[in-house]
Length: 163
Image 1 (tube, rainbow, N blue to C red):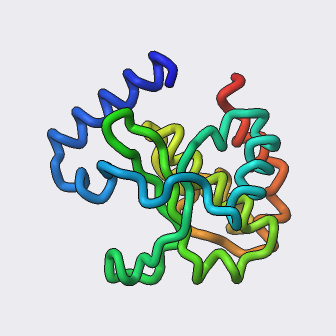
Image 2 (image 1 turned 135 degrees about the vertical axis):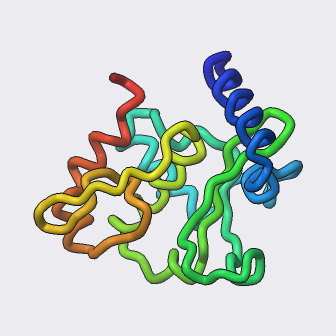
């Protein structure tokens, strides 16, 4: 973990303690799984290549039944951090995952990795004239047409760490 990332996570942790309302759902003491689930690994590696190494640098990724865990079935994915070193972890809803095409899987993984690895950036909810999200950090999944139409733009946003 870089000193910069450690500082960001420390500040994030202090902010979460001060707000106290989301600390239980965002920070975990132990990972839910010891490594990256094999069904997610290839897509995470593809996103890592597309982002030129900016995204996909995590040790823990797996599936979570959000309905059982939180009583909600409309969550496609979630990022959280594992104490004590704030290791990023992503959780994907298998009910969504196995219905998505390859492009949608890449964008879902990239979105959750963005949350996990850049916790200081939240959702960016701007749309263009066609109704498509301007950023891969849009708060919800969108049509396959928009994903294909905007894919190159989203890929360039994945590599933002090189700017």
